[in-house]
Length: 317
Image (cartoon, rainbow, N blue to C red; front, side, top):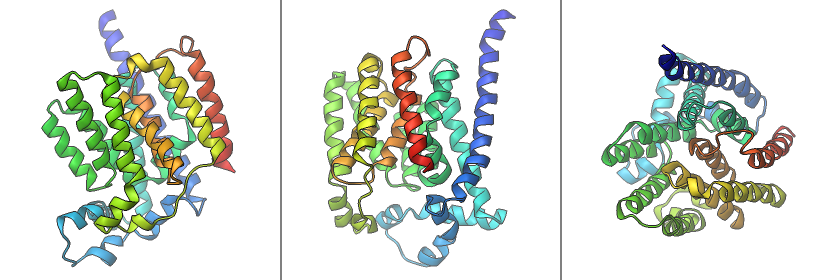
């Protein structure tokens, strides 16, 4: 009985906490984002019938189908019409994503609650799951693929399905393939990271050129880099996290954290939209499972708490 209690109780507690967090975010935080007309969630609501207006009846190639993310727009409109309100669909996506990220992070962190909740309390994460539902849902599929699929082929198929919702998942699939090859070939982790830097250069720095060649509308989008001081704060946070846990980051989620952090810094350097990569780095930071004790990891938590406080001031202004 004591053994059963030790095995079952932490899982049940993590499940309940994840459900409560997801409910809170799907209702309170989504309602808050709906009060801000500049929030991305407004674009989803205004253009919920995007599939019917732009793509229905058109003859699209496989590449155009992927680049225009038609799969997501089709199902979003279908569910919105069936339920009667696109906002309820967005709440459902937010709930699913938030619950998956929280519960999976607690599982990866041996069912510890405090470290995961502190990391996921960041406003950048809350904004990500409450107003960028397309990418957060695609990332949810990727996380489930990594955790539940033991065969690489099955993971790749689910990643490709997720890429039909958001094309950036194709970049995450490339990073996952790179790390997997490195594990199979028993390459040193530093060499895999160097190859990851090369992939960052292609996916972030050269992205406008590549998208322009493919005819993607986002090739001409304006830059949206974060401010220098805010980026410097994240650079310091990444540096502390990487220095303290560099020996424990040799995992798929640890590698994806490093890849996302490098992408955020590269995006800032070329005046590109960097907040997406910051959001991804927070998710992968939690999923890496390397932060396990508030007292032992006090240095990182002090740095991260300052980051959270400053970010709330930046987010709520």
